[in-house]
Image (tube, one colour):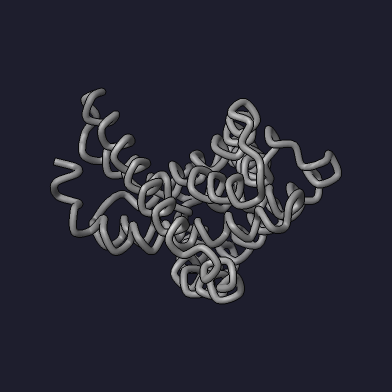
Length: 230
């Protein structure tokens, strides 16, 4: 019975996201109405109505978390598909990815230390600039709180998808490459999904940036972990 309940919960989460994506698409895909945010609010509302504890929901939805591992492998296809973009400007792309990832992690950890946050929150903030599969991978390897890492990664993506377009317009930054790299670095999967419905070339740059930033962080963060969160 528990297996059936778990399968029903997982299916419900997937359907909630698909419905949210269709709804936001019908509204013109506004930045303030990310499918991830809408689906999350919908699921949260159902949990509240059903008086279902979050911990119990998390245990039932565990199969979805287990899929994040294969998702990382699947992201390799993104890099392969966009290999022409990487070959065209490898140097600038590498500088943007490494620089952006380093600044994102350092600023998050620095702010956490400045605010006197504990190791648990600091660890979660350290991975917030990564897409969820990579954030979970790092948290798993370092013993961090996986649910917190996933939640902060999603929240960062939602906020970034709203703020990055506004900041780019304010700074008069144009061009698919610049906007795509900025979105992929700051808003990863949520921002990339938003770009796919507006600028296919920018979405390609965003997807490559998101994956490469995740790879850089997965390789570097475990080595620096004890120093970052102490």
